Length: 287
Image (spheres, one colour):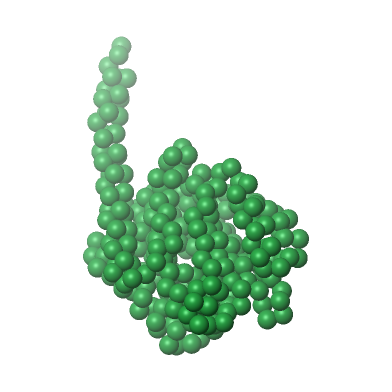
């Protein structure tokens, strides 16, 4: 009478180690690709702003998702050249590259110059070529991974960009937004880049501009479980705050639904829920 359950139990026990092994192998392969990117970045003398291990952070919160790690790294000279051309392009700065498990195969996706051109109207060929040279070196030598730039098909000016205008000056806006982020119990602070300060250090006058980096491992893990590639753009979250020529202050961030559609051609309800949370929270903070 116990034969069938016993056989089924033995089958599950036999298969489970293979499943765990496959998951571990996928994570190890992603780690190897990520480590190569980090090594390349270090050899170029670039500054690492944030190193985010999506899957392990999500697992700590009880959420399972494919292996995924993003490296955000900066070069003040490149940032300054791009921002001097099109300030709004700061939403997609500094450099970033994502290594992730794509259905059992290791993939690497990065933000390329074509993305900046299509989304923000950056047209300076010299600036764009320099951007691509740097990021291409960062993802070089990845022989066991499929490497590609972020998709640009269907990408138009300001695609997936959420824009809010602040009722406050630049400094106050930044502080109020930082306070909102810090108040979220499920959110981690990853860092920031003060683009205008970096430009000033190079002897270039740039309007006030900074980017804040943060994220929620649990909601982010849910949102990325079927969509790991959006970890390049949407996770961590990025708030780009800048002042224009008229002294008006604006806040830009990414529409998660739009980026999911860009990478995968579809989105799911958790993306919309996170969008609503971001818009309402940040709009209330700066109105």
